[in-house]
Image (cartoon, rainbow, N blue to C red; front, top):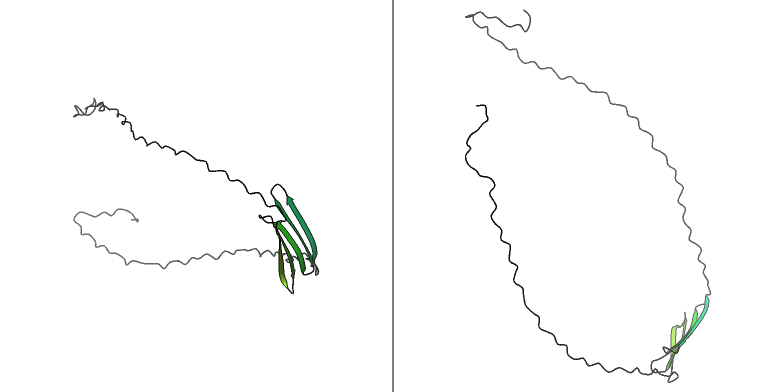
Length: 185
């Protein structure tokens, strides 16, 4: 016969013993793909201009500085009276300032500064050279009547009555089923 045909066994004939072959294992096939050749681009060469150090602007240095200034304030409305003048020649500074004191005297300060002696000041005071400011009259304090404070009112309204709600209306009645199924039993 051919493989796969049904076996016909006569009734009462002894059954042939079945045998099984030992299991056979085959070694696995080693199948590896060859590595794929990859192409890479060469790195891009970048050229940068060299950093240029910023040269600071040339600062002019005066080995023998000189200046001179002065101002004067005479305000009759506020009574402000002051003056100042100063001059510099190299490392030597000379100047003076004056101002009117509240008592009417004039205070004058003469000063010098140099690398050898440092800062030195001489103070002069001229009494009564400037009219003293008139004292400001202080107004008498205003008498206030005591403020009457009413006691706080502690009255509360009764709470609002809540609305009464009726029980919900039953819309369905539940009970045993009278019949099950449909028209075709």
